Length: 502
Image 1: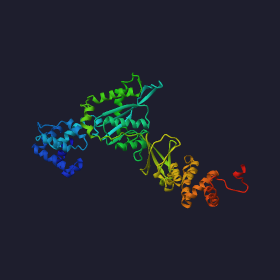
Image 2: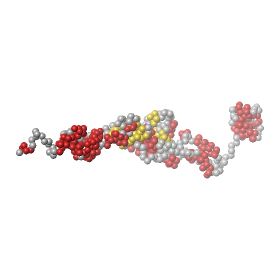
Image 3: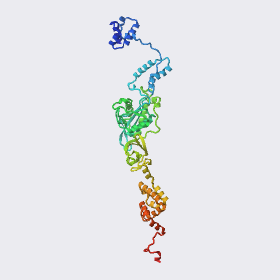
């Protein structure tokens, strides 16, 4: 070291103090003192020392310790274990020292591991813990596929996913990069891995991110829902920062070079045929032993990472679309020309509607307030009576059967009168009005009066409960006399009797 010799020159030739030398050399007084002490310890004069080269002087002052045969750990194993979640260098040293009591010291252990890491390729200096991340992207290249139904040649998109710790890779072909394809590829990838990591690192395509940005990130609602289903945290790479998912980018290159290039001269008829071939080549890539991954990705994944993944939920994610609607005055929302009820308390409030293949779920402030089976009947209405106000529930209760039962209880004439009104053809409100009016007439006048009035009204072709009430009120005496005559004909001086014809 050049500074050592200079310190000694200032000490013996210039006779400067330690403080002065430290200021001139921009080093600590402790370092000056250490150099002076070491030179005195070697027992030579400064005249002899000044003739030595910098290297010779340094070797005398800082002699190397004699090498020993203490066992060193397998640094590749230590590096692999450091990738495990919760791993620390201290714990690994304790395990090493327990097996090798005469081994190297902890500080030596740490220094040697740092030296080992410096020798590794720059691309894997960033430590990815097992089960921590999944990186996903689409390849830039496409594959031509013949559509069996139309004969049209279409370009299939290639989805790629990787577990960066083990390098375990997944790839498949889809027709496009739209939300349905994007989400479905994730579901199949999770099944292939047999679990999910803690973080999901996608790019900023529209199927994943509605609004990009480090501080104002907004995920696509369906993508967010899928992540919630699997319990995985989505952290998209920063726009224009491919290094955020460097191993994902590398996985795309591997797929393009070792799969897509190999398939360039093949003709595929349908996605299934293409995906079968892609799966064969993916498994070949995962099984291949490399300098970087001597065990191969598959064995590395099975021994290190597979058991660190979170388990899959009982059911795979079912694709959903999300819509925001305003609840209408009739406490319904409209999906594909079909109305679905919402609790009436939410009239004129905005709700979020989750639409899946089989269900309609309605949320307000992230709380589910209604759920219905999905209907394909356009113009129809799916109504839950629990969503209705009390007065509306009463209207719904008046089914045709109930109206006929009330009429039958009152008597035969009342039943015939109501049957003529055809309850099945009446509106709900019409049946409600008829039923409540009928019950009121029964309570006020009794079944005998009502039966007589209904018979009179039917014979008079007065088919209205208002008219029945008027008959009871204004013509009941005439009605009684008329009904007492068996033949139904009243006597009068201008009417000829039966004797007239004998």
